[in-house]
Image (cartoon, rainbow, N blue to C red; front, side, top):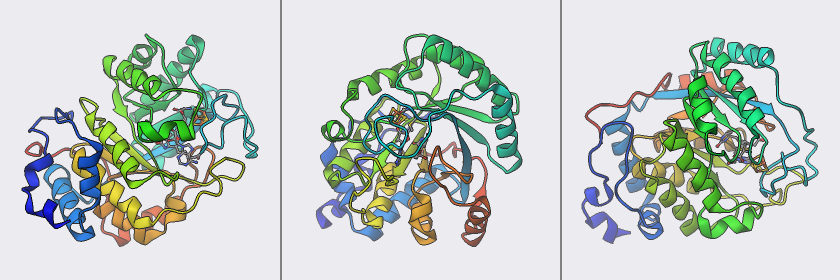
Length: 342
Ligand code: SAM
Ligand code: DTB
Ligand code: SF4
């Protein structure tokens, strides 16, 4: 849209802040949609400019995921293979023991991961679950890995316990825009997610929060999700952008595919609105192809899940990822913030 291009590029800039990233500017969904509607070359240029002001654009973080408690979840998230009510072939399991988790974390570290994320298919963990996960966090932390957990909605005190055990990040996704949420999940409210995010932030744990693209939402609703994320104050340090993995047995199994360039645009818009966040090219890479992934890195993604499996679905082979990075002259490592960035 030429009218947008005519405006100064500083229009949507949050004021300068040192890390962690902050956001005092309120984004409307309409303003974010305006970014989506830039021409593809202009959008990519803006995203790359912001990326380079804040990070070495060649540096990609590797995080490894482990499902520490799989399946049997009481929630009805329409995309999720772990919801007990859908017949997806995922078997429910109990929480893993510390020795098993330690082995998996050691393997991830040896393979080059710097962050280790533990996921549990809970609606909300009980106090005794938190005690057990705290033990797992301490075990992983002792290897010198960054730690992340995603366990569902937290009660008061849970995030503190996890932080004291060495938790660096808590992943809790908003998943979609508020006005689309009820179409995909009915067993909780958007506000429940925001409440947990506030508890995590309040406990001094870094926030990893993003969403899923390709669930049948409109472009304005994709913009609405990004606006919600960017308006968290401060905005998340880590923003996973998942492409829906269509899993047989879930209500979204037959969802029409999204234009891959719309996914790339979503990454670019996340980068522009959350300049100092790690934008994570998350689920869906196996189905995406190398060229689309390359565009996502050019659009500002600087983190991937590394390892043959996500939680229950597949992820590219580790060797394929190492080859892809080499072909693109990208490096595996912690994308550090450039101090003069904004
Ligand atoms: N139960 C916890 C919760 O919902 O927060 C933690 C685990 S849950 C599996 C973590 C995230 O995985 C979800 O918020 C969603 O964004 C993502 N996810 C689940 N199924 C997915 C799918 N089929 N495609 C893409 N992302 C998915
Ligand atoms: C996130 O945003 N994506 C990851 C992680 N956080 C926990 C999970 C993706 C799950 C994809 C479906 C599956 O493997 O079960
Ligand atoms: Fe349960 Fe999380 Fe899956 Fe929803 S996304 S069904 S809460 S495991």
